[in-house]
Amino acid sequence: MRILLTGGAGFLGSHLCEYLLDQDHEVIVMDNLLTGNVDNLGHLFGRDGFTFINHDVINYIYDQGHLDYVLHFASPASPDDYMRYPIRTMKVGAHGTHNALGVARAKKAKFFLASTSESYGDPLVHPQPETYWGNVNPIGTRGVYDEAKRFAEAMTMAYHRESGIDTRIIRIFNTYGPRMRKKDGRAIPNFINQALEGEPLTVWGDGSQTRSVCYVSDLVDGIYKLMHADYHEPVNIGNPAEEISMKDLATKILKMTESKSEIVFKPNAQIGDDPKVRQPDITLARKLLGWEPKVSPDEGLRWTIEWFKNN
Ligand code: UDP
Image (tube, rainbow, N blue to C red; front, top):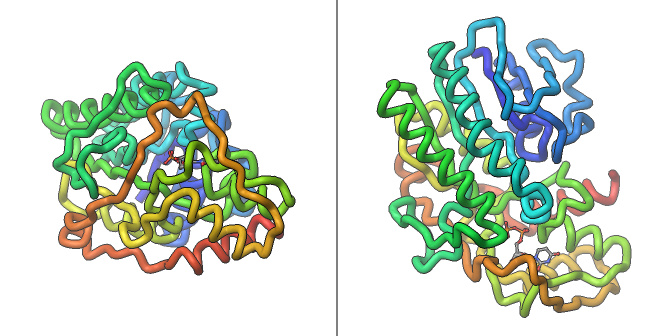
């Protein structure tokens, strides 16, 4: 297939790009490098089938050739980033998704939207099945990301229903692995780098809030399976087995890195809408895709810690 991948210079996009090239697809990565980095793709330059275009998809997307798939992954995804760039986050979710859908329609390509567990907001149903409509504060600090992605989902379904575009929507739960930025702001890269550098691990609030963490290779496997499934409504992909409180996660990382750092609990005024719990219900992914996460956090965190040590 010839595939357009927006946001392909990011953490997740770069892993997906590499996987697609390994399956002998042609991949055109489009990224404005706001939060992505070409270094994530450095090893792919010069490889057959790989093209990089520095372009912000909130502007018209132009491609000369035939396209089989448009994968729309462009967006800031770390809370630190989307709070720093709230308008650009809303624009890429709205105008960016519109342009990506437009190019898919023009090329008669399939369309794949990277949505998020943030669509559920601070959930009142636990774990979260796809049928749950969520609990989002539209004017909260996280609202810029949550509502942009909810709009993107609505837009994708509108194009599917009105224009007959063959669409997919994934709701991605917390994912980690190599190539996250050192100053990414998210819990796992923050804790690992703080531990490795002997700095205090910053746990926001009392650390009782939970997340379920999924290693990046499992997520990419789920994406590829969903690309090939005939299903148009959202599908959760994440690792439900590994729901952990942030306090326990920080403790685990301290132990794994053999660090002498302390844990400090800090109020974080920005994170007023920080979800208190999060765990994907993956019954649908299991049934529809035969997908199951395989990497345990002990393994995945070990690989990620090694990567940060060496990079
Ligand atoms: N968090 C934390 N310390 C940090 C970074 C994050 O305690 O240095 C918390 C954050 O408040 C949230 C959880 O860890 O409750 C997961 O945050 P992350 O940014 O990784 O992803 P989110 O699921 O919130 O998008």
